[in-house]
Image (tube, rainbow, N blue to C red; front, side, top):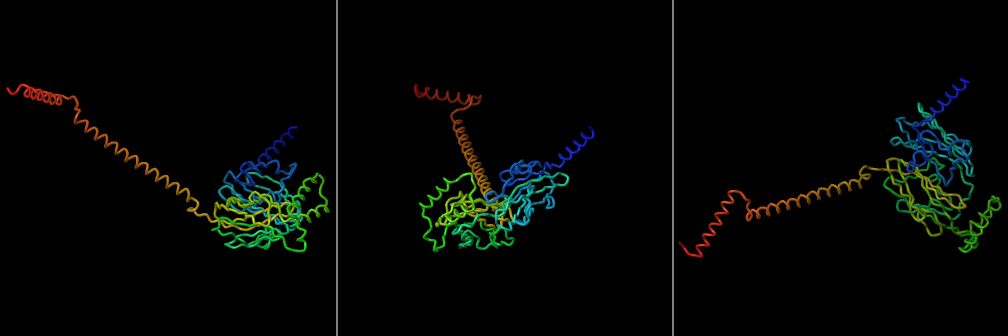
Length: 402
């Protein structure tokens, strides 16, 4: 009995010691630093025993993990290991991308080899020497089972001229924009703070042009789809019919686009006509990516345009960030100088007011001295002589000289 208690205590102590309390992991360092792992303990939705795994797809991104260390332990590549269960569909890697203070950004490159909607389970193992270890799990939908959207185009405004980067729902030059290629070479230079993309429909004129649905027919179709929704899965034949009809619609619905990057280098945001999603027609709609660089370095930018019923548009490129101290603190410097000038001006104004007030007081006091003498003995003698002389003068004037 005592032996069992001893073994239990030893196991409990070892289990407790294996938790690295200095380890924190997050998916978004701007919102939280420990939504995945807090003080070495993974959240319940990230463990192997979770009822439902976290699912990463085109709508839920997890290309970066942010690791915070509360002590002076330096995180190295051999302390983090990535495992996944299907090497035929993916060739995924993980590496430490950037280090700022005690925060490390870990970039996960999934590298899907084939499209087809394969669900792959991933695992990251943190093993911190003399601290402890932790494991997290999630699933990734590698590829997309949906077809490309015929007629959907995206132009990028690059150095004052437009370049078509997506035509008929497919990247024109994958070597420049496809995240599954290692040699994409398009880089936004450091002097550009934003990029503009134009999204529009341009259906190719062919023999099917007469079959393109008008607005009323499109509206009736979507109403019929909404009414026919049920819990039963759509058959392959029904899905093919749905795709065939969708191709005839001269517009496409998109969900709110999103952009992902290493937030220790840049914190990009999306603006423009489609920042909340919407309907894309033959009239170009703008999609503006503001980079908001916070530190020098290069980072991968992934822009995703989610489509309804069709394969999403994903563009990947590089952004060079150059942040100088002058540009970083120019606003603070201006505010500092304005405050200094304001304080100096206020002091000069106050000094001038006080100087005038002292002069006025001194002048008033001098004038008061001429008519109001203090009651000293010398002043009383002078005043008595003045009164006597005045009486004598009055007597002389009244009674004449004696």
